[in-house]
Image (cartoon, rainbow over the protein chains, first blue to last red):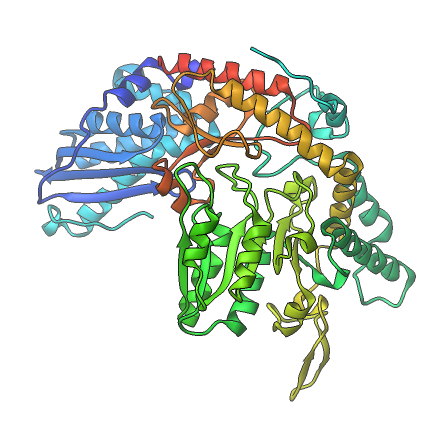
Length: 155
Length: 412
């Protein structure tokens, strides 16, 4: 059962994260944290033509939260905002065990389905996605300034 | 590897705990998170059940037999705590919800009435948030200042450093008996003496020591001491504040309501004497009676023997933890309590805990409610193993095997 959580793909994203870093201004900056365990994920992105342009993540935490962030960056780059919102809901459903992932559609993200058997780790896996949701809320709340800095914290 | 023979039979002790009995639908657990909370012996559960089944009534109120019996049992629990701590009298024992509330009570009541602008409170760097935040709050409100007593690189408190920090403005030294992260056992009697020489008071956080070391408030000569029932084999929701009577008598109530007054009119209120003055509302009656049973359980084994047994197991654990490559253990060695915070290679503590959990070993991971200490150690999160009297060398062996397995899962 533990192999289901710590799949090779997860460990690979943890050890070799994709898109770890920060962006120059202008950007949307969103911090997310789980104060109970200290996990921290910061997402920075730009939106161009209704799509996610550049996106990076930083922060620190367990393998699940950091791998999930790395997969997120890979998965949402270039997607339209409606596509991203749909994907976020699919990821939540998969992590909560409400749906089975279609590996072809979900790619590496399918590996996060292993978390469903570890209720105490669900929050680790969802943290980057909640952070992204917050970032997009900020962006759509002020569409004309959606490239500007917003450092509202989830803490 | 050298194995050791423990003096007390931990297996026999576990037989007194329902949590450790085989259950058809549950796997047995190796429980190594005792600094968070301990399991409860049958005797404690029986005491709760017996109270609710046969003696349930409010205390200090009813003019009927059961009410009188409930009051008698509740006050007997207070007497028992006084004996446990070697307090001069049971009036020096106040029941609270736990260590956190005990310290908040002192900070709000003593601090609220005694602290003046410019006063200083010395708080050690290894304190739990429960012995930091109440002081920060009251210091802010009163214009007093928190002075941080830094730890040494080894993870101890240096008494000469305390002598340097202490001034005529120091009013309180708040210090833990045993660190809930480092396992350091602090020389609290010496700390109290140094505080008193400077005219300051000393509060001892005994949350991690009450179930593990002999405690004698007269020998320590501490002014206040706090501990929690649930970390000492007792119920949750019950804790203790010991205070010297002369100090308690000068202190105003912490909360107000029923049971803590002598008389009330619209024009005048006269507070009850100690300890009732500090126990507004219906107290945790059953839990206090359960705590009585827990302290009986501890003293039936004997605190000297508990300390000796846990010391031997601690030495065994220290030796075996050193066998695990890339394991970094925090805190002093070898003289320490059975609390071990560590990191393992670059594996996050939550991942360590999850993998161990898959092998039915329960440990804690995280910041252990001590952010300032985590920052000082450069390890915001650690894994933590903490022992109690029912733990055995087998448990340590399973832990070590489990840690090797963690390394395997993470390809270290």
